[in-house]
Length: 362
Image (cartoon, rainbow, N blue to C red; front, side):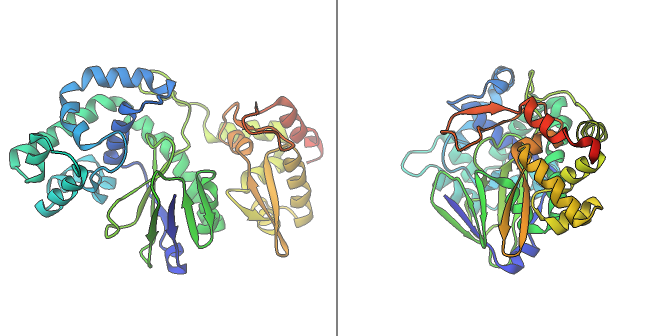
């Protein structure tokens, strides 16, 4: 488990990145190429990359093993400024860092001549590394990069809205179940037992398309604290694993209003990641009693959950509620009534009709 320890100052300095980081996406997609438990939506993409980027992969895969440690210098902070800015920073990594990180990568085994040449900071080796990354990026992402960016933007925009309306702690509650906010610690499923003490530096959260299961953190605690997490993106289909653009946010809002009624739809859209009944009423522009009534109907339909915290009731979207807001036709959720693990159902028509049953009075 990874435990990220916050102070009050860290909460004020925590933010979600403005968009995807192309170098993080490159590294994490290299993991997906080597994944044993392969996800079917990525099969076409994987075949395309393995066929088209074979020369580059011979240089990159020794630096990015399927499991465990990979060097931090491959994902410099400058990557958020764009691929070339990140690549310039990567290729300017001091030799001492190259040597130390690649020695750690090769611990317990003899490194290849290629890895040794990179560790020495050889100019020809670094030039070849840069060319391999550029070639891999062209093959792996090509014209689909804008679609990757658009999908991640939907996630980033949602988290940012939650943070704006409800604060950083509310935003940190949106990452479950693999990331759990238990103040003042963010607990994350992780392959190793690891603690990160922010100590006033704050945390940069980077949404990623190719981060598929558990979040990923930098290994060096001296670097700016960064956590890359799986973004909620549209379903993956086709060669790139990306779906063509679907309904716009305005279209989704219109569909919700027709289904639930304008007021109830506004209440559902106003929940964000977490809010009290009073906050919900203010955001939706209704009275507290009306917000409580609509929340009860939405809760009964499985679209949100509510819990008491001292003298307030806090409301949170369920996966079904989030799926409805995102315009996705279905989501998988635990069956009601405490059913045994593994018993699942899709978003049922009954749940939607229950939410819309009183729409005429909303």
